[in-house]
Amino acid sequence: MTIRKLSLRALALCIAAALLGSGAALADEVKVMISGGFAAAWRELGPQFEAATGRKLITVWGPAVGTAANAIPMRLARGEWADVLIVVEYALDEQIDAGKILPDSKTDLARSAIGLVVREGRPKPDIGSADALRQVLLAAKSIVYPDSPSGVYVGRELFVRLGIAGPMESRSRMIPVARVADAVANGEAEIGLQQVVELLPVKGVTLVGSIPAELQRYTVFSVGIATNAKNPAGAVALIQFLSSPDAAPAISRTGLEPLSAAPAK
Image 1 (tube, rainbow, N blue to C red):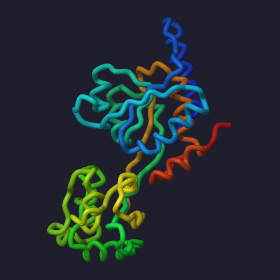
Image 2 (image 1 turned 30 degrees about the horizontal axis):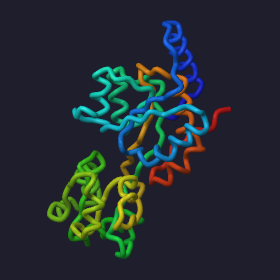
Image 3 (image 1 turned 135 degrees about the horizontal axis):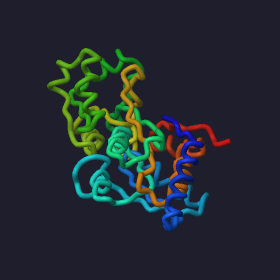
Image 4 (image 1 turned 90 degrees about the horizontal axis):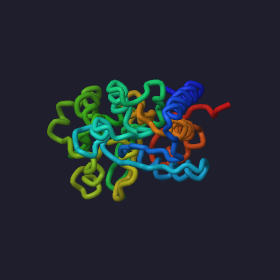
């Protein structure tokens, strides 16, 4: 959902009043917990926010899900504080359900489409329609896709929807997320199917494009304010910046599709 700016401002004021009433001081820092999907955009937008507002960002990286010690859910479960979380939407929803994120603060920032890559130097096949994509996949000897929700969709639904689940059993396989584009680049596989944002940074492959809209399964990246935020006003300012049209060009450059809100009046 798009950010409700007035509601967020009111929310921030309420939390700030409670903190001030208890004698707590609001720092001019905003602590952000973030996972990998929005990373490239964050590395460009974070410094822009600091320059525009004078606030300092503290960035903590970790997996959006899982039980590793540095995973964001585990950090929050241990009581570690944060002002803002930027993670894949379903992971943010889980933290809302766990009482770690303020529900009304949830804001969708961007989405990533599933794309297709071939080895650099090879011709770019036509994947502009469902039938064209079907023919490309049937002609490939080897296809890889990631061990992630988008990869599960490819293996369990996309091939079925295209009517090629049978032939794909012997020529496609799921591999770790970080290896999909590399497997294509080194010739281990002819085609890779993965989120565009994960494919673009890898050298040695050519992005053919996103799969057709009627077959697409988007991954959405969202942001929210933590219930134990120490700087809610700074958190609101950051969310408004990240969801503004001014942030859209940087988001687009990383292969994500911005879900920008209208500027504040």
